[in-house]
Image 1 (cartoon, rainbow, N blue to C red):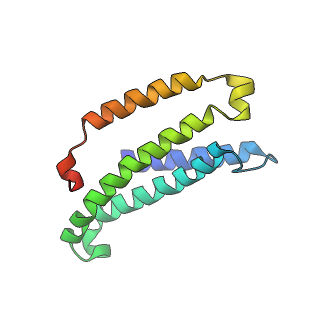
Image 2: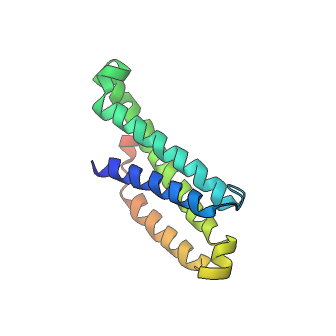
Image 3: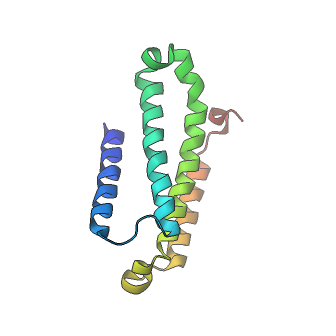
Length: 130
């Protein structure tokens, strides 16, 4: 339920951002392009997670087929985290940030390093097929 809520909120945020941009060009900055790719990846990750966990027999034919997808779903989750971090880093270089809110790149990079260190310390390599 919590994951479904997070996907709904992510998509809602995307719609709000697009509506607020008005006549400004869409998806022209690295942040905009990375954001679009990130949103697509989030939705795909969520769909695969639901299929492998809740509907493996119905869609994949068996529970074992769902379990075989697990390590790829986990790998793609880590790749998605990197993509999300890159999107946030790219946001510090947008015109809006540079002229209005001034979020420093160094602060975001420190946060990224801390997040990746925390997540990296918890990675279970045997669950990734390594």
